[in-house]
Figure 1 (cartoon, rainbow, N blue to C red):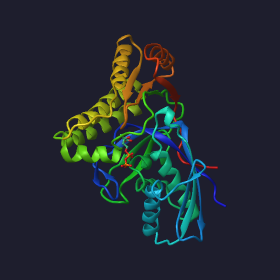
Figure 2 (spheres, helix red, strand yellow):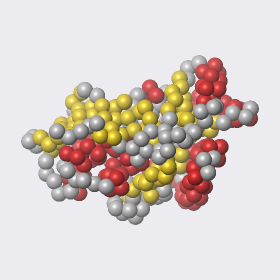
Figure 3 (cartoon, rainbow, N blue to C red):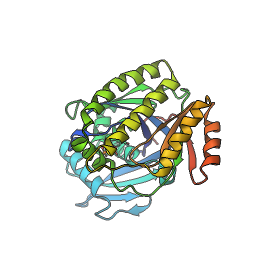
Figure 4 (spheres, helix red, strand yellow):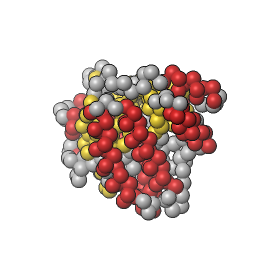
Length: 321
Ligand code: DP6
């Protein structure tokens, strides 16, 4: 009996936004994230004698349509390792939609780690992160805890993640400001493809990411939270500029997204440490310090009655339980 693989979600401080190889999920640029505690996926798998994989998520067996992406992933893994067996996969998400986090990062990281055990692949963490990448790009980084860099690479072997600083004592808190939990109209996969193909600024984005990745690594080494926040905020808003400059243009922002951005800016002008980062959706993650978080939370709760907030800290890499 294999152990349950647990993977935590992560929030990108330098965003992954665009693939040079969609099948292998090789990104155009490096990216850098913080793995969070609290939100995770637990997955177990076992070899079955059926001719088809059986996928169960949060207690329900998924039908063909809703398990398509996972079954495609299992096909890719079987081909890569020259295996034929089908699997029963049982997964439980502790990544509440209500907290404004997507589950594909923790989901595919936990699945990769579970398959590694069931097929007895004995992969290194680096190879495990490459394997998670074949499921979802952001999953590459959820193999490790703390601050993690995903090296874009040029092929399956050279595109992997690496931890930068896994110190759980690092003074950084991520406050999730939840604006909507509805499923987004344009998935990250679709959104990034539209940006790559049609935004006139896409090549500038790649240049910007290269320099911001170096700058944020320096800020992490210096434990300079203000600098980390400044870079992350600028990077996230630059990513969203790609969506607005795509043809046809689109945006993940809701009106309240802009309101939260303005509130955070106002808080900063009063000396409170707070910076925003936003993924492919309307919800805002606010980078705070231990000292500033309660003030930010109070201010947001008072100003925007419909916006709920959830606090998260630095999380660990893959666990086996
Ligand atoms: C905005 O990892 O969900 O969150 O590789 O197509 O599955 P696929 O995309 P996904 O994209 C994440 C995009 C992002 C930025 C990031 O996490 O780096």
